Image 1: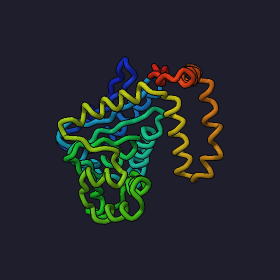
Image 2: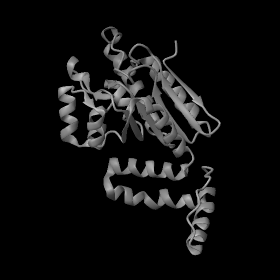
Image 3: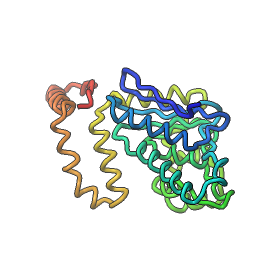
Image 4: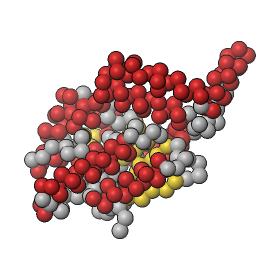
Length: 263
């Protein structure tokens, strides 16, 4: 039985759906299917991605059932495979939106953190339960939370395993916005479609600049800025948008909404 499926719509939106009842726990099969979905997206004309989950909870974390039987070699190989799949999703050049409902814990939280934008239902709760089995956040959760909310919060949440309400996660900068639970999927889908209709080459450039900044700081990002930015002038989107904006400025008219092609 599949645990994660993907669809590619004609309007440029890809939807990835976790469906591994009852808790959407993440195992080897999930990571295999995530990697297959990412490869399909990379080979397509997709312009934005929505990651969602079926059921009352986004995910309660990793499928720990097989862990006691794994040798250390198997364990490392499997976790490296999880990390590679998660990171490839994180490094997609198109915008990614994650819709989170219910519990979002452990590996599920670490997967959600790979998204560019997290939209949560008001009843959502986030947390690192790894401390309850005396391990660390194996897929980079603690330092990805630190990148968004700071070291102090990240360490506290990792050490306590507290299930943090969506509203606090929004206040601390981990979640982008919180919406009523019954509006979550519609809101997240509409936002993802809005991004799909935007200048996707520019979105990809911003993602690349932020990755550089995260690893090397402001100076490193400054060093690559024009290598990343100036090729945008060779795209059809920029060639169309800048003259149109200049014409609107000179005529005193509002800048028209552009129909970007992502080229």
